Image (cartoon, rainbow, N blue to C red; front, side, top):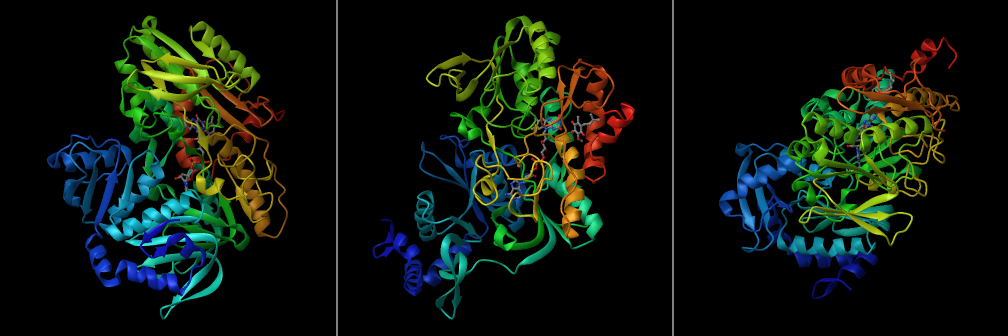
Length: 607
Ligand code: FAD
Ligand code: UQ1
């Protein structure tokens, strides 16, 4: 049983949420005193991070905070934006840094970005000791699944419990009103948490490749004020460029643009995280407590990177040789690892989950191979590809070509090997044999490129009404319409469409979705069918590329009337120089719907 003062039992109180609880909490927080104390902390946040050294001094505190925020939370904080920084914790022990900021928006951005990044850096609001205590107890209840969610906003503690009844505070008494509770502990009083609802004809959740594309198409069709995009990120990244960033062919800065510049002007941008779905009532909830209602919903949440499922990560990314092209936080480590490589094993991994761009885990390896050759260290490098899959690539035509490439370049491929731990102190990577789980193999590494385990974002995975048993959005693989809710559609990586997850697949899907959503809006049944088109430009060096294009049954579906399984310079330039324009200008503005018609033209209408 959890108690947060001598006579109040939180667990019990949560169960029988009533007037008594309200009074007791007011008593506990000592209302006015606590409010005054909390108000004094309204400009402060607390940073907890493994990157704060135990021997840090107060004098180094500001510089450390700014660096951690920039490197790991990807927010730039200038010195003049900071009022004060203070080191918390005892000397020699684990520290936190308190930082007071002039701007309320910057403070909000920091908290939100740290949540989105999910990389071990925690930035939270600064609370009074009493509120901290209460939050600690509530988080325990959350861990025990006794409440659904609890978090803080502007010093208030918000909590929700799906089976509780919503309560309203009216003249000091709590009234039971309807289902789906969300109550705020606000200055020691409860009130409903939701702001006035917003309502749109179409809501798009996620403003990445799929979401931005669909918002562009429908906001231009339906006009201003009809479409909203819910997306928390400041930057929109063209992720396919990260393969080239890792190899030093492009800069990370070239791969991103501010979200405000890419989302369509005619759509309303709600810069929040979706925290829950209510598909039966056509609503989604955001982390600032808004309810957003829709007539139609497009879900385009992409994939969540779960580095933390590998023991030792993400911390090991701050040690030499450990890199990952999959995150803007760690992609710069790849070139550094190549530059610093002297001799030893260069190990490349593929996890035991679905991933986006299934070719990217090995593209980085071919680029590394050529880098080592160019810099005279290839004979010192032992290149190893440890993949969880039973094959090198899922489509036979391209798998055959890749086996030739690895043979020719003396690259060792080990199938069914899954990375489970990184030990940066001894520079060891531990792999499990997926066919004999008791068999672990340790590889010494000089360079380790990690492709993380991935899943759909928690908010989607936890919504049983929307997902299948694997946690992916349950849509009809041809019409992209949800299998249970006809006003919900999905696009891109978060769906369970059984094709390889790429931006090229989104190009293939967005035309189908445009037609089917328009039909649904006109009260008709979906009629357009997705063929599963996807493409993976398998970059095999600094000037070569195998342009894999195939459907959801693993049959090649090539655009050009030449054998695309061959490494070609032309395809490399298509990938490096043409694709970014096709993405930023064509796809995101809603014009590019994949190479279907180009393919027909190239094959004289025969394919
Ligand atoms: P994303 O573009 O990832 O967008 C998802 C959006 O949802 C994000 O903006 C995110 O902030 C937002 N979001 C997440 N949680 C929430 C929430 N709770 N509330 C609101 N919004 C939320 N594809 C190719 O076609 N060719 C390639 O060569 C290629 N190479 C690649 C190389 C690498 C290294 C990587 C990482 C990817 C590559 N891809 C490639 C894959 C391609 O980038 C993805 O398939 C594509 O971006 C998926 O688009 P999406 O819209 O499904 O997801
Ligand atoms: C594509 O359409 C696309 O979307 C813009 C990509 O994403 C970056 C791709 O990588 C590829 C290969 C395609 C397919 C287009 C052609 C012309 C083969």
